[in-house]
Length: 120
Image (cartoon, rainbow, N blue to C red):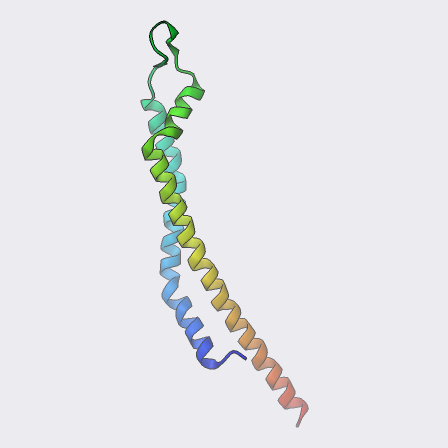
């Protein structure tokens, strides 16, 4: 059985973690969007040519894209995105668990009222 204290703790968790969840989601969305900008910035900074000496050739779109994806700043951005998703998902699932606890408690209360009414 879920106690009244359990429900109050769950509700308090939801109240105190609403803003952190919103911030975590905002950070994730920001990083997802910034990733596109960062790729474009790095793409534009890619060398005009690849290779050395007589093996040198004009950089293709694929070469520039590879340059952008391999850049340490882009990789660091991906690590930041990974951390943001982890944070958001952690809070979100704990929030879901708290919501489910309240729902189970409500069902238990309704069942108890039905049993009480049947015994009258």
